[in-house]
Length: 366
Image (cartoon, rainbow, N blue to C red):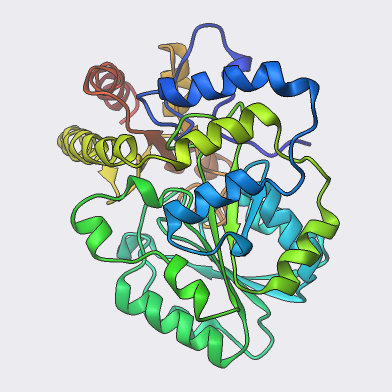
């Protein structure tokens, strides 16, 4: 059975997709052109070491190219890390990206959950440190987190890193949506990349899939100073795992930051506007620093939006986001329990069109 993700436009005809967190500006022309040019070179194998690409990524991140490993999306690297490291016990702050758990359990790792609380806006606080036990081998955190959009405060993140160092725990920090942070959201946290030069137990995941709108090409990369871990990951990964068009597109994206910075500014404006409009319509919407919003709505809302031509992400299959109060309820009460949904923040015009449907949906399904 397939796990449900966002972006399943293939089950519908002509639906407008707000379920996948992809940059509404689309793939930049210079990225698409690089991929197209590389199609002609695809009669050759890619460089198995991705030397030019890793140099471009190292320049972007201000790190050494020897600390970078390339993957067919960040998810592949999470699976490779789990297979190479073979941790016994992992700690996840949930709700979070499903592939963390999927990758870890595929390697025989047991999972401990730290449940983020709705009444705290799903923010990760100081209490998380107490959940890192002597049995914990690996901690995986998203910054910002998916599907909540919450960032980890600078003080809290620094303390988590210190605790993991003291207890010799591998900290995997997923920064796939970090480039979307803008203003106070970005200033209130920090990227773990500079710390990879100091702490070998820190592995930072990055992705170009979302910001550069290339989910069909797919590209992610990891940054870590533990050479033995990187070598072990390469041993369990397939050779030539990144296609020539994907590598060329990623190299073009790595060479610039202006597109990303402008996108982050636009997303911040559109997100605040969308959140305010939804709240005025009676929805509970949670704060986010990324290009998506998590909110609560009626159980019929997802189907209603799809009938109106808009695909939104039902988050019921995220641990910690089951239908509100559903555990232990009798059948009818469980069926009517409020659900959590996630929507991508797109252009003002697209957001306005979805907002009309959400207003109508609130009236039809209060």
